[in-house]
Image (cartoon, rainbow, N blue to C red):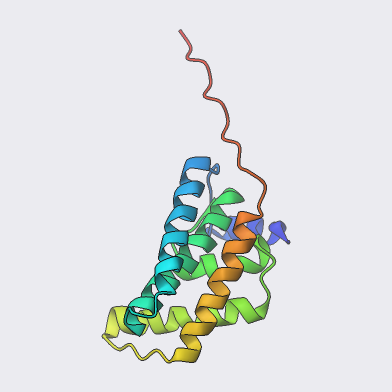
Length: 149
């Protein structure tokens, strides 16, 4: 991992530094697990499954970024940071970039055309992210400081 690249993004203002929260991390992970499980339900429409898998992937990528003490207001940037947060290779981030593009077409232009292959690749990428995020060492939230009187 090249966390120094995240520091460079901090300097440009693309990322914000914010202490990681074990509670937030756990919530993002829990949300991703439920969504990914539902995305694998073949009785749901392909569009719904895509939406669920995409949002699970985003939650996992955000969890990885937050784990390292950063936050982004840019939805796409959390995917771009994956090589630095989880050592994701191009086989992962290219799929997520394509899915982000498809998601934006649906969200902003009302056009969603998802084929089975892209959905399958998205679920594989989300499974990979889930495995990597679950392997991160536990986050330990700092003890609250004693109140000053």
